[in-house]
Amino acid sequence: MRLTNFSDYALRMLMYAASAGDRLITIEETARVYNLSRTHLNKVANTLTRGGYLKAVRGRSGGLTLARRPEAIRIGDVIRLTEPDFALVECFATGNQCVLTRCCKLAGVMSEAAASFQATLDRYTLADIALTPGDFLGSPVPARQRDSETLPA
Image (cartoon, rainbow, N blue to C red; front, top):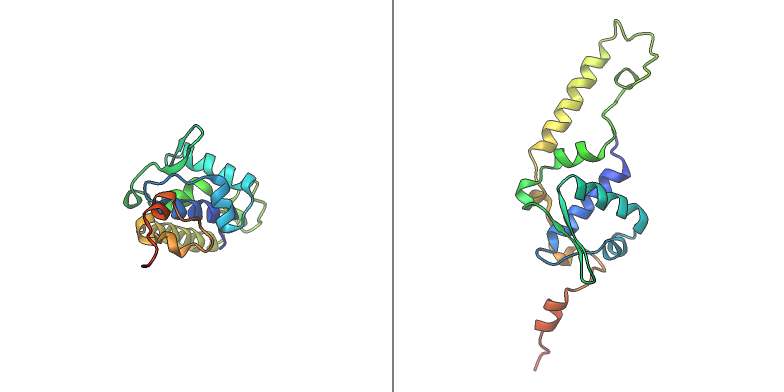
C-alpha cells in the first residue's frame, strides 16, 4: 500500500505548521523548506483549509496556521480527507471487472488490512509526530526569535 504524494504533502504541511506554533507560515516558505512545488502545496493547503485543519489569514502579513490544536488532529482523519480511496484491490474499486468477485476470499482479508491500517492511523495525532522548528533544514528563523537573540560578549 502506498499513500499519494498529496497525503504525504498534507501531513508535512501540518507538521510544519505545528512546529511554527503561533507564527503564520506561508505556502512559499513551506515549498522552500520541503523543496516542493508551490502550486501543488497551494492545492494541499486549500484542501486542509476546507477540511478545517488549517486556518488561512488573508492580507499582507497573512499566512496559514493550525485551525485546531495538534492533539485534536488525528492522522487517520487527514488521510481519509486526502486519499481518493482505499481500493487495495480491483474489487474495491468502481468498475470492478474481476471474475472472482462473487467467490473470492481475498477481498475480506484486504478489507481487514485496510481497517487495521486506518485504526492505527487513528491512534496518532499531529502532536505525536510534531517536530521543532530546528528540525526543518533551511527553515527560516522567525523574526521574533532573530530579534531576541543577542551576540556573545
